[in-house]
Amino acid sequence: MGVAEGLVFVAWLIGGFISGLVGVGGAMLAVPAAAFYLHMHEVILISCILNVAMDVGLVLLHWRYCQARALWAMWLGALPGSVLGLSVLIYIPDHILRLIVGFSLLVFIYWQRIIPVTQHRESSLVAAFAGFLSGVMGSAISFDGPPVAAYCLYAGWKPREVLGTLGVFFILRGLFTVFLQWKAGLYTDLIYSCAAFGIPACLIGTLLAFPLAKRMNVKTFSRLMPLILTIAAICCIVDGLVACL
Image (cartoon, rainbow, N blue to C red; front, side, top):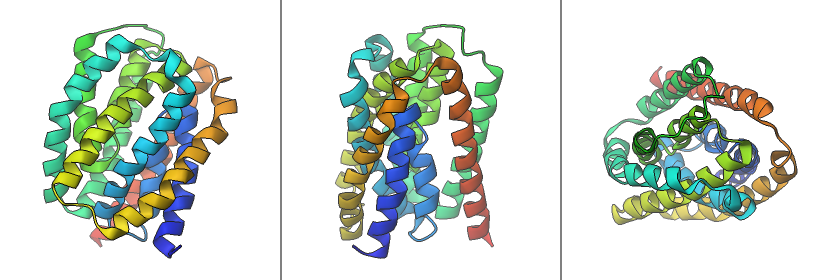
């Protein structure tokens, strides 16, 4: 195991735990950590593969709580968004991607704070738009969670409904993105090597989080998610600004 593979293993072990706890945020913490050693484009490609592994764990543990109607609306919106996001990944420099990630997370956090989580609204149109944004962000920067997490909070779902629905959605969207990236010839031996170490780390982390996730209430869930996203946003912005110097 080299330095890159070891770093990916530790980063996504923690990321798998975070994702297993709240459904999003795992890659948002793992990516900035790995980007201190690897190029951002490499980390994003690795993350896109490992996101699928984390989501497999979520689905195995929470699939019975999946909200099917919203799931398919988000998936249909994510298809064109994923294609658009691939172009963004290819043409935008590393440090700009980091800053985009950080400030996008801050916008999401602010949005989440001003929208009450008890409205219990359902809208296929809003779900599809969230899926589209998730597709763009997932292919471009590997962070597909914020838009659809915002919809989950908007709909007022319970924690395990969020985990089950997002797990299935992220697998479908993530596999499509991985196929697009592979078809574009973006994967290298380093990407495959790091992914081979990161996959078991993701699954272990997700399993470790399960005892806590199944007992978490809505109030705790709605407080924990913004905290995780804030830490991830700060890491991305600092990393991007340092790269600009």
